[in-house]
Length: 177
Length: 167
Image (cartoon, rainbow over all chains, first blue to last red; front, side, top):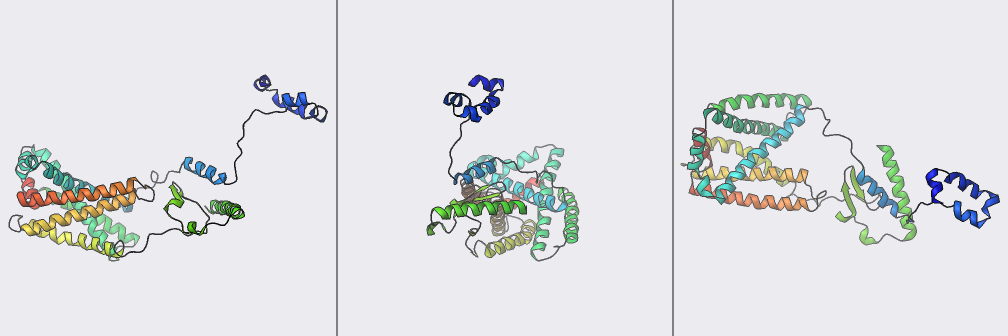
């Protein structure tokens, strides 16, 4: 009886139909003792599949987005970003020269740079010098770690600040060299 | 953390007994390969029990300690190489210039390879990982050819940087 479901009387009717007095009456049982829910019959091995499907849909708690910024890991990812950025420039220029040597040869590049305004030239030099200085100095710090130095917390922080100071000084020097 | 481990161990025990009740696990499936575990956030989903060993890559010095030593020696060698190449001029010592170019490209390739291995590991990205790895290798070959062409037919990398810096 579909209408009993909508009105909310289905549980009451079902209870009444299952009472011993009515349970033997096939007409009443056929009408009210059913539920209209489809169930699947699964083998026990389907446990793993269901569990894995649930695992695929589970969210993961924030970890990378909430880690407190620290010199250690910020310095590490900065080393990677500066290295990757400079390498992208190198790769890009080498491939561009390979593809179009007429447009990207040294005379054109030097002409183009000479034609830029002074402020843009200094900004460009700073944008190139700072990552190069940071990556080089942090690379030396990394090689120190590989030799077993600066491996304490104090050592890591002291060398990290030294690298930052050295980067600032080297950028200024390279800018006016 | 331990409660999930206990739950997982109990679950796996049930699975193991259910499987054992049905049939003996074929010997061919004893060693777990790449097809036996799919990687999802939170850890791999293992097919089998917690008693099957985790697969490790085979030990190899070329991919291990020799690779590490080569990488560090190359990075350390870049320092005197750069200083020497910029102290002398590119046109008078073209071999030094070429050596710097090749070393820089190799250093960049090793760096990019670490990025690919860290963020696109084949264990988690079975299709995209190898594709990007080989694309990187092909790009590096192209860059080496480009650097050679530039150093031969043009003024060379150090000269270019010096000229552009003082342009």
